[in-house]
Length: 484
Image: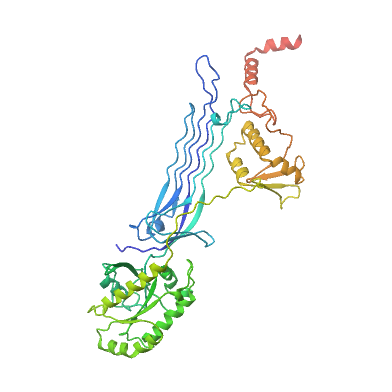
């Protein structure tokens, strides 16, 4: 079975939803109402990307692009909180770049153990024990868990290599990596042999560095011709670029100078997504296959002209291994100089961004689809809407109190809202009734109901008892009562 190299995938991640809170009242003998004891729901699990140096391809995500984390469990009575959903960790190769749907880079994952939360789990809802207060001593409702975050992300692998090998197909890039490192790339004597980037580790004296090739790079690659665009990104992190030139080619119209010019034109047209400019990277030229007599003659002919361009030239043969030592030490010197010129990594700074004094946490806008309507936008109002069970009028009353304390009703009145006008918060529309007071001591009422709102449609216990007595009363007695 031939292994596949995949360096670009689209994944669909979904974090776990939070568990619902529990509305429960403690009951025991001779204590029918012992107080609320509903537990909180568990938080949903996150989807986390973790860099693992033992992973070298994104192949697993190609076959399994959907990743879902566990949801939190619902709270229970006796103050038992729901279990928290486990995080889902996805291992990615070193050098993976994460992009959003618009193509913007979200994060660059470099270094073993680097973590990135791709999707955050939803919060668990509070149980009625946590919602109890002086106004609501025994709440008949609990908050719902929030749904987990869902995202579509693009993962691109951009090899972490110090030196990048450039050259036409069959120029000898794979052979060069094989003889200077322990890598064992697939090598054959025909065009387009290498279909995946090869990565090797080279030791030159006290220096250790990595070297990679860009397979199938041909004229037009920067515009997507061939496989160039798929693999040009693998040289974005390289400190030095190496032109590997085939001096023994028999293809008409090709020579070392034209090969270098063609590839330099492609590099000039390519814009690295990680920043920087490929034109600023140091260049080396390697004249390969000098074990062939005609190739040695051609190398002696073109070397002065290449050096006149300011490019160091090295003549090698991967068959006889001639010139390899000089090349590896020259690369080590350039790479060490690049490493020394980079700024020292700074410790992560903790940035505190306090909320502005005049920031209410929400905004009120006119609804563009309804001249009389308004839209309230804000993180907290949206979250409160998601947490509310609209089948429970007491929960709706609690939501109204929270919005009023936040200042939403006052802001709506200033914006020109009138009773009965439609107001949309978090995708839920309702008719605004500013008569609902906030912070007022609650009067005694049935659990799960709010006397300030419309009476619920469900039948209460007294009504059910009266209907039961009515059903058991004989029809003759009912007639006598009507006659009297």
